Picture 1 (cartoon, rainbow, N blue to C red):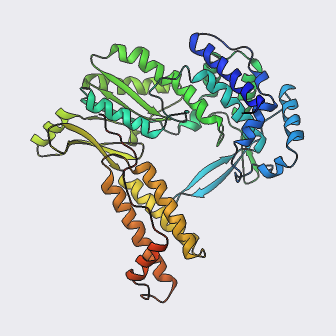
Picture 2: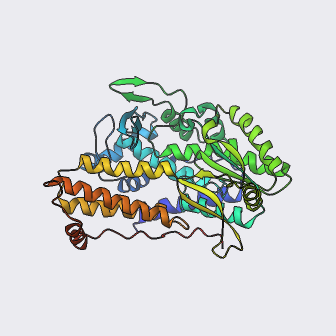
Picture 3: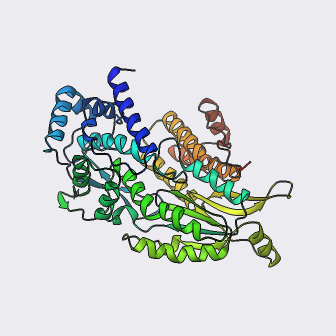
Length: 441
């Protein structure tokens, strides 16, 4: 490892150690870390084909005179003349819908500065964040959140679940509150000033500038971290320090970004939490999405009572999966199982069909290879315990769609299943299989 990278890593580790030992320590000297070594490391980690922002500068353009460009950037940063540019807003089609999804694209230098800030801030806040926060954090992800959810529901006396989703979270973060939260740990005025400049940088859409008075930077790598800081103080700590202490039984909050579920032993605790949660969020300019927020009876007793009524126990959605009450194979033990959300399944399939339609000029070999890659990606996420039926069905539907599409390329009806299977021997598609074990034991 080059000497400069060791120096950057060592300094960040020292910050992390200090933050871990003293939870009340305020860091007053951090901005000197925004040096050429750190920004060069951030540059090498940028994607080669990443879209450019409003200045149209790509990674290749910047790399043509990298030393000079980085020297200039560092100089402007330390003279505090560096000002983030507005984020370029574009829209892409949303599969399975007539609406479009907005995307924000920062300029290349803004990406570099944000990435450098993330490395510095992460060294501090990774020591503060609760273990059950899983969104956009190093070393953990969606499957970890799903696994601890299984451990809680199957290993603890859970009887109620609150499923919650914050409405338009990234657009509604109160910037003044966010800066106040960051100031609990950071007293370096230059770091605070740069973060605030990013918050106020605004958006450029169709050549028109729009100010950003609320929310976090659109499309920026710093946005998820700032979101975690905001929710750490508004939700996570409040739950850990106050709500749990007032509960009569076991309670656990599991959060991924602005999507979270809370498990309760006592239904009365769940009801109280849902009421006070909405009040708490309003204090910070946030509100839950009513259609995605609910309280339900869930667990072994909920399953037994529903069965006695001749009904099925309620289900809830989290991170792309519908969770439902079930039993182990031998029927002796309660199990919480999961399957791909029906709407998500449909959207993924529509997305594949739309990809085929827009890439019909590709060669058959290219289509088969890309289809195989798409299936591997699908299995890597959705191939979890108990979801084998859904991923098999998805693989079958993709294969059926592919066969129909290839049949349209020639004379209708000339392409037989026999020819198709011969083609699959040359370009095999991956077999659906469980990739991630989420079992609680």
